[in-house]
Amino acid sequence: MKYKLIKEYPGSPELGYILSPSEKASASDVCQCGSKVYKPSKFPEFWERMPSITWHVNTSQNYLIFESEEIKEQSYNSIKPFKTKELAEAYVELHKPSISKAEILEILGDYEGVTVEYLKDELNIKY
Image 1 (cartoon, rainbow, N blue to C red):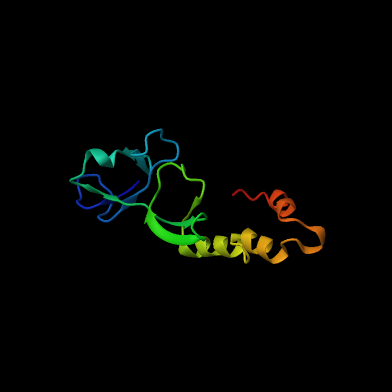
Image 2: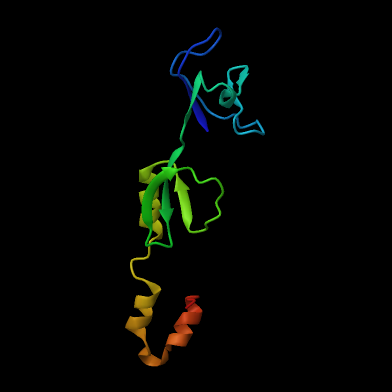
């Protein structure tokens, strides 16, 4: 979680300074600025919590791109997070099928001995 300095105090960084969590810290609210370590969540009168907005692609909903606060745990395998909308759009461009597995089955059907069951097995389609 990022924090923005909204009120200066002796020894503080410049007003408007944004702190990011320290990668080395075990707690997510421990931030480091140079050699100083801060716990901004303990001082809300000086530090304002900034929501972590990220872009997501929901692969189970036709590759829907949406913006939201960071999802804590990746408990949904169908939701992929991205830092920018451009990265999310690039992912969709590379991964969204141009034709669905169901459309392939419908087009091929029983064409030249290829059965629907065979295609379902080959394409790992679960109904």
